[in-house]
Structure formats: structure tokens, C-alpha cells
Length: 354
Image (cartoon, rainbow, N blue to C red; front, side, top):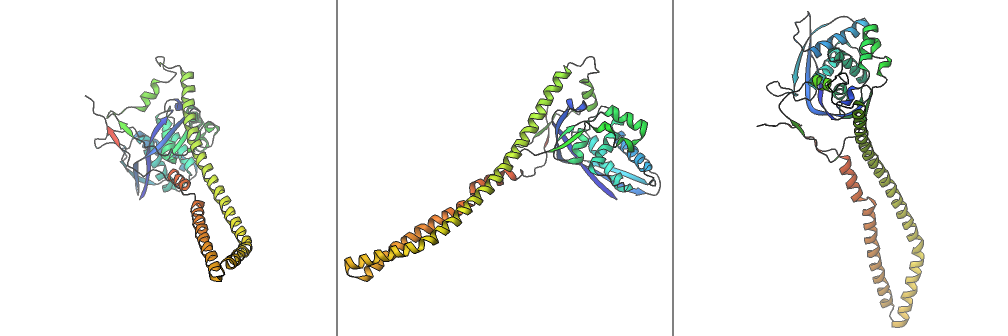
């Protein structure tokens, strides 16, 4: 048995503009998963799978045949955490997640040896046969996980290339030139909360509603795309600046500690150089006190007492300096910034309407 899984997704910004080739969006994967179990069989098995699963099977099978690999029979079972107990979808990209998980399972079954980028491309080629305007952002999120910036390729060009030249050629054709998947650093000290209205919606219908081909579309398309692009780039830039600031703070900490250690060793050198002068001065003071009091023990005792007090003061100051060498407050700050927030189950809340 082969078991695979893929996470659901959330669009943070750019979810409508991204359907236009080359336009960006920011997505994050969630900790709710869709599981696929594939069992190899000796004979064909009747399949009542969804259209997205069937499209994924056809795409992988076309690539298998192109590579001259033998046909294999199998049965697929799915289990989803992306819907409630009544089967209502939360809008976390269950269709994309099942497509990604099925492509990975079939890749392992046939031994195709696909890397994540190839699996994503194969999943998108399968998906646009079912939903031609699908951006593929949800597929990228389910494939790569984490926070990503995504730009979609020209799907019409991809479909045409596959129809004319086959899926193997479509995986590496020039139609992917506008596509981008870029890892973003996760924002820190922020909690992601997700609400659910309890009413599933059709992504296909929502996307078609803002399509420039729709005469009733209420949007100024160029202005909308420009505004969406600005929002996405501002968010991606802010996340990158925060990560760069943390890296700079780490570098400054390393430099400060190195400089402080150099100062300590310089101080030790000066102490050793001054030992001779200190001893000579102490002897002279002891001799002077002996002459004034006529008692050698008084002179030696007073100088020894003064030296002991001085040594205690110097050691206390050195201990404080040594503790400060670790820059505890700065290190505590960096540690807090580096540590990701504790993993918490994604709460999908239903909003009761009256």
C-alpha cells in the first residue's frame, strides 16, 4: 500500500488576480490534510472517483505510457480533513490537495521519479483539463507547503501545447515562463485565525464572476490587477525585510561578542603588564608605613587588606563583564524571534447566521 497526504491551503492576498497569467498571490498551507491510500490490484477496479482524481490518473498514465512503463492496476481511497462530518467543504482546497496526493501516489507506484516541481506541473496540467481557469496556486501550496508567493502560467497555452505535443513536452515547454513559486518567511508573533460561514462556494463560479470575458464583470481589470499586485508585493516585501532584519541582528550579535572577547583578552594583557608596577608600589607603600609606625606588620597588613579589597572589586567587575559578553537580552530577543509559534490545530469555525 502507498500512502500520501497533502495539506489544504489558504489564500492570504491576490486570490482573484492570480488567475491572470503572471499575476502574484500569497498562500499558506494549513495543518488539515487530505490522505490518499493506493493499493495495487491484479485486475482493473471500478472507480467512482471525482473528476479531479480521474484527471490526475489520466495525466500520470499518459506520462507513464510515454516513458514506456508497464500498465499497473490499483485502487484509490481518500480521507479528508478539509470538510465537516456532513461532507461540506471548508474552502481549503480539497480538490487541489487530492490531485497533488494522487499524483504523488501514482508517481511512487510507477517509479517515475518526479521531483516536487514536476509533480506540481503534472497536477496543474491535470487540473486545467477540469477547470481551465484554475490558477494552480492551491496546487503549489499543497505541493510545497509553508508560505509562498505564486504566479500562474498561461494555462490556455499549456492546454494547447499538451493537446498538440503530449504531456511530456508540456511539462517542460515555454508556457511555464511566467510561473513562479517562491518561498516566503513565515510572519512571527502573529496568529492565523480562519472563519467559515458554513456555506460552501464554487471557486469556478467566483473566478468566472470577475473574468474580463464576462460582460457584467463590475471591475476595472487593469486597475484591479495593479492594486492587487501592489498588495502582494508589499506583503512579500515586509516578510522579507523582517527576515533580513533578524539575520542582520544575528550578525551584529556575533560581531559584538567577538569584539567584547577581544577587549577582555586585551584587559588580561594589561593586568599582567601592570602586575610588576602594582607589586613595586605595594612594597613602597608598605615600607613607608613601616617607617611611620615603626611596625612592619602594620604596613604589610594594611597593604594586604587594600589589595584584597581591590582584588574582590576587580573580580566582581570582571564577572559582570563576562556575563554581559553573552548579551543575554539580545540573545533572548533573537531566540524569541527565531522560535516559530507553537503548533496549534487550525480552527475552522462555523458562523451561525440568524
